[in-house]
Image (cartoon, rainbow, N blue to C red):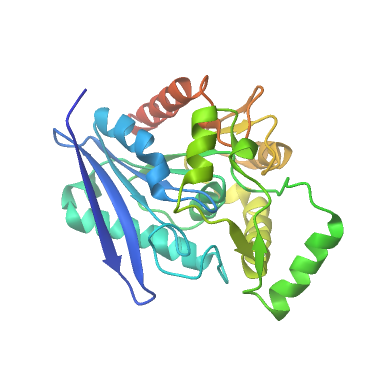
Length: 285
């Protein structure tokens, strides 16, 4: 196994401190990968991905979103996704300031679940010239949580009247993966957020509508895998989004797979390799 350097630090911003983790290969990096995690979790859950890509020559930057992990903010609350996008851009900018050589290397972005929604929104914005491709797993483009319609209606109303009203999370590790080891880690992780707010729910719906209506603005090659039995994000909505993306793309509806595709034992190794191959091909063009 190649020696990997891991660096953890806080970035000071006007809003508060953003926690970042970076994985650096022993030799000079050949590319830069930015990873954005999903709702309720944190960047530490992507150490396996950071090590894998660093072992393949990538400098990897991960970070905790506002309201998550060790980053500032009311837990799992957001007023607008522009704050998430600002955190993404800050993490990217600070990584390049710490290692200026990264600015001249191929850049890739990855997002899972809510991180996939944030990344998709990012791809519909003006992009850095060195961004070569992106990858998503189970992007949260449509809600598939089995709740009565009245709950969604009340959440939308409360999102305007009292956006910080907290809602307890209804799912656990067994709802996101079938991997017993990951289920245990998920349920026992002290950094996991076990609630959300009506403001987050409203902001998420607003971002979903924008992303779905602007799929034609995606301008880089896009990779996407989604579980066919995902209990949190609607795979049919993801499939429709990918149909509308005009660039080179690949989409797979992964068989017998829950929300966390890369945490399903049969798919971690082939999934990581598929993403790596996608990035390598895009970076060579």
